[in-house]
View 1 (cartoon, rainbow, N blue to C red):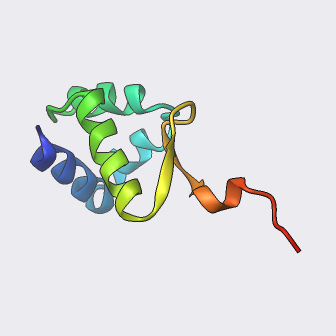
View 2: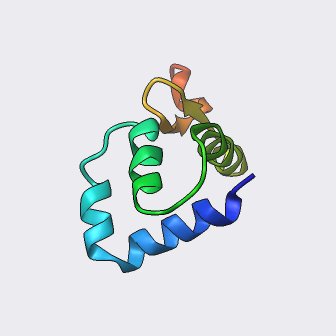
Length: 82
């Protein structure tokens, strides 16, 4: 797994304004991976998804596959009972 590449990309996004500006226009994880590859980073959509899922699980949240990002905690899906 290219965890180190994903971590490097995330770190660079925080320190390189031009990189962050280009990435800010992307809507999906697949677009982000293609953008990262065009800038010299090497990781796959599957690797990025696995890392996102692991981080979401660690935070007690579930991954929203259609949005390619982290949804609210699972408890938020259940109606409140009074």
